[in-house]
Amino acid sequence: MDREGRTGRDGDDAARGPAGAGGNRLVPLIAAGSAPRAAVAALALEQHHVIPADRRSFRHLAERAAQGRQPAVAAFFAHLEQGEGVALERLGVLAAACGLDAETLRAHEPRAGCQAYPAYVAWLALGAEPVDVVVALSANFAAWGGYCATVAQALRRHYGFTDEACGFFDFFAEPDPRGAALAAEAGRAGRAEGLLTERLAHRYGRMLQEYESMFWNTLADTCVVQ
Image 1: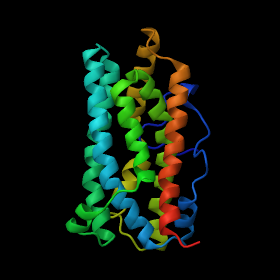
Image 2: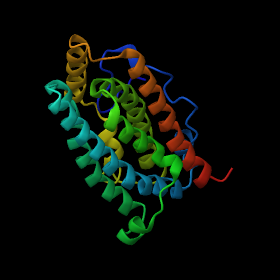
Image 3: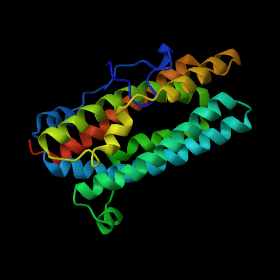
Image 4: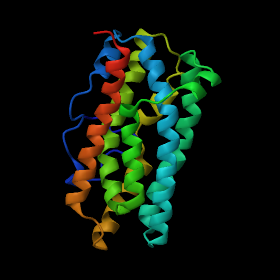
């Protein structure tokens, strides 16, 4: 897709699997205005668990890379951690636009299908080579950014959401040239140091893409009346 999202591709084909593997059933419904507003609210509820989890994972990956004397890789994950902080702030505005108060957010029990993605990112943060995770994440962020661009446009057009309420999706949809540059530099450094294993980066990217589809389709299965 043309819209590359926060980090885009890092120029390495290692993690290029089938974008949206398994098919995303929810985004086309939102794009058409046929998904219920409850689906958007459910997405916001789940993201209140996803974003903090990913932020912790990125912080851990940055620390591991720094300890391993991989400054380019550490800089990439530090950039991602900072971005998750911005996303979390904007997520609060989205939640409010969906009519979700603090008590509802606290009481929400997350869905396993929606939390598989951050759980896998945490698994990667614990044991995978950080530069392999750079490549895997960069490929998946392109798909996520495209989905967010579509949802942001649809929320304005069909659901009456304000620009401020769409800020969470806008953040991930807009280009991030610094993130793309950091990803490219991390990939080059990892390859030069013999740390990048393209077979594993491809595997991690494929798994992330499938968990990404699981997130959206879990919401579709639970929130959309067939």
